Length: 111
Length: 111
Image (cartoon, rainbow over all chains, first blue to last red; front, side, top):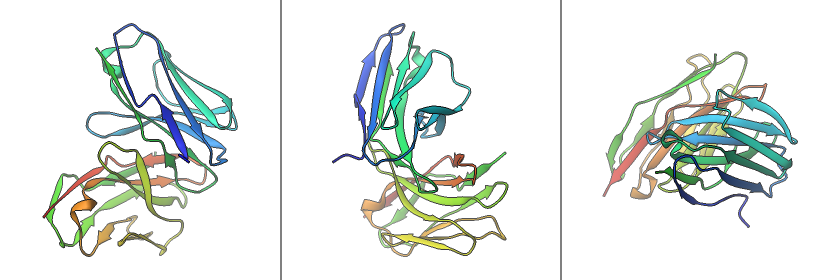
């Protein structure tokens, strides 16, 4: 009964490839997020969707494109992967003023 | 803009020691305040929260009090255990729904 589930958990790929990370939440939350965590554990917001509508789009290369087919899913597609994209990517969801529920992360390694 | 400043780590304590991790914030209005914990290899988990001045959040022996006059939300625990070793994040969320995370503080508790 995982609340926020991400797949895959690990992703190793070569530079220049295109990859996707999927996220699903079964909490009935109306807002979903993508965060990037670097090797120093710093968290950076990338995108936020509310009821399938993009509401936060931070300064992220346009190689990153989120897609929300419904309010329970938020996927992240990355084109032309670069070495600097290596990080842990977290999906999260929330409702109202409650705190966030995070997924367990996807560790992306670009070689 | 909004910001959260956490005590720099890493913090190393012996088991049963008293823990304080300082957190101060800058925000317009009256944000909600949160502490999250990230255990190795996992996503962030909400530890506790406070939504208005003088509220005290508590969970698993951890406490933090929302101090509007000092714009602080320090995390405390009276007696830490080895299992408390993790990265702790302070965060705020404004009424507009925007969240800001601190840089995280790594805690290591030695037996």
